[in-house]
Amino acid sequence: MANATPFVSWLKEAKAAIAVTGCPEVSKYWLQDASIACGFIWLTATELGLGAAFGAIYHSQDQAESKKREDFVRTALNIPSDRRVVAILGLGYPEKEPPAKEMVRKESIIHYERFQT
Image (tube, rainbow, N blue to C red; front, side, top):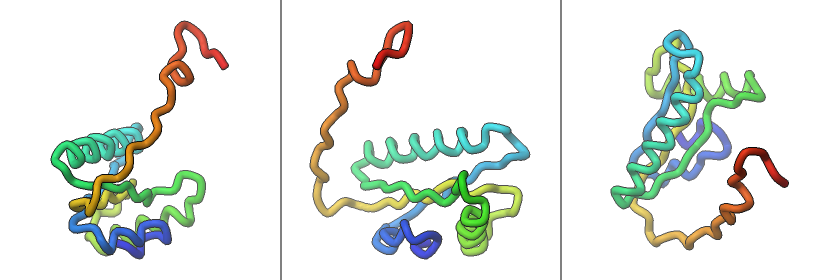
């Protein structure tokens, strides 16, 4: 899976991976549904003490690139042609705890009644 795109070479080091797909024939919100699933998988993995990383396969702005990436994963994993391959989540045990990220102040992203800059 590490060769699906130039941006997921880190999958070589992953101990496991989950490919997340969507089915346009089932839901017009297939991309949103699959994206939400990715978030829940990520949260569950980290709750279990696993490291998780998101590798985008579907490319909404470049159909040719998306087809190339999706076909690579589809062929490797025998995924039916009616499914769109949204992402691969790499999983493993982190060697060390990553440093905490600086949180954005709530006041800069939460707005009441109307958006304020």
